[in-house]
Image 1: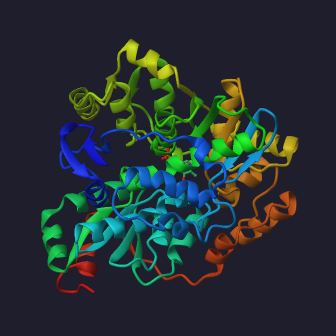
Image 2: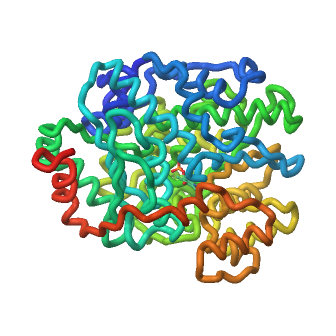
Length: 486
Ligand SMILES: *Cc1c(COP(=O)(O)O)cnc(C)c1O
């Protein structure tokens, strides 16, 4: 299986090279040269990790034996259970991993894939994974790469941009190959600082002398995207097995979307032959994508809002490029032009004809925080099921576009992670103390407090550095560079 770049199809690399490089040198994203097909019926009798392994093996042609089993071994039960709420609606819970967020589905697999890809290529350098996080990715990367061979993880989070649960969880991270620092400022400051570090040639040289190569764990790496395809297949099998739909009948999915990685995996599943009907792209008040599906124009020239669903507070959805590439008939020149326009004009448009084809599968919808909170309260009252704010956006959007057939709401976080907006949504007061808030939520809902979150609250704090974004390169050099390198 070879991979090609969305901005230059002549750039062709092997699967192992695509995983190790992350991004193509001219800035494009790697996509499989041909999209494999898979008959979901062959997966019925398998458990989740067998289903995932089957999907992974279609995309990675180097030795990945046993990867899925190992990746999902320490999940709490079934890694992706489908919970039926009614004849019309099921919830696909993707938060049974170690950090209680859907990022675990892929970040438990990526380190193992990366390790095998490096071995396949005979690469001896250690990998330094740099992450800028708005909360969930950082913690999931720290856990995923914890004690991995030949890999160090360094996470930067914005001092003013993560929830107290998320901050505490990262500060108390365990493991001998990781480090965490806060950047004074917001997520954009952290992201800009990390991008500058990736682009700094002097730093790259200094790190190389110490035996390190920089790499990224963000969602543009194909090694993060492919594991996500598996849960669409798995959910479809479970929907048939559970009597939600007839065999071969279409099934709709509604996905709370940020960087477009999750829903893109659903689109790939459809291209691989899975009978998906509609993919409903749910956004919060940052509704760039909703507007795109309505108007054919992607326009980031707009205000940025901080919301109850921070993992969806994104204007530039980096994986959208892969979708654009597919939906214009794999035209690399056109994709490159549009990405260039996004930089220079902050917008680009697709043709009416393209949009029409897109509408055969995609529907966009959005809702604000108030509507999300109402949804949390209403669904809990009606069915006793507790949604987190991201999943609540999806639920609200699915209702807004009418569930014309059985619809799977993709659930991306355990509600406890966002206790400060979940409690008020249920009409309960915050106590001002996270642990007490947890207990209050547990008393009210009878949903158990997840062990990893409670553990993080009680574990000793290890990482307290706060640095200015201008200091990031010195900080990395000091900790990992030649003179003081480990
Ligand atoms: C990352 C994340 C999302 C957005 O997923 P994308 O793949 O970026 O679209 C939604 N909800 C939660 C809780 C997340 O952590």
